[in-house]
Image 1 (cartoon, rainbow, N blue to C red):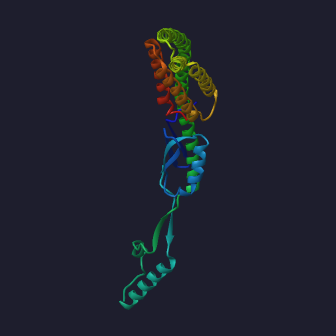
Image 2: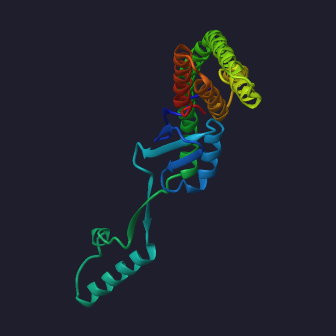
Image 3: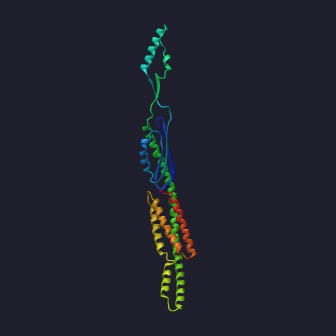
Length: 291
């Protein structure tokens, strides 16, 4: 059993590049992925999604990836030789025409940006993504560990609440039997009252007998409750996605307990069913965060 919430973070550095990955998981009924990645990584989104889904099956996953260069990128100097030659040739021609002495100095063309152009080497996005993918895997591992720890806590709480409900069933059975005996006693009293007025109203007698047989009989509800609890215990031992299945069984448990409460004609029995329902409701709240 795993929780749907958690956080994971990892940093990877190599060849002057640092990639930081943060993964945040929130509870949600279905899988949803929100990505914030460096520019130029769009082509890798499908691979990122696959990597995430290998770890997370359900919930809203928010991933933030930042890539930073730790040193200036390599540069190269581009020189426009043809344009430089034209400048020098024109300067010489102009010197002769104006009867100037000497040759053109290098300084006369150094400040011409159209001749000398500094170009930064393009960042290797493929290498950065490979580094980022390693960080993503580590961040997901940290996330999964946290989800597992929280899931074990929820599992232990569920197991304790199941034991509490199971412990309440014998008490429910005793109180139900006691209530049934009281109902039958009242029924016999009513029969004696009806028989005192002759002739006997057979239709009314059958109606009273039917009503007495139905009121207070919760044996079927108890049997189904036990079955659902066995199913719940089996799910608690299962690996993988169990949240939706547990949620369904808790709905069924809640239905049986509600029926018991509605049939109850005993204050003590009603109190026990309220306590059992409270245990089931607490599990229903927590299961919303189980994958």
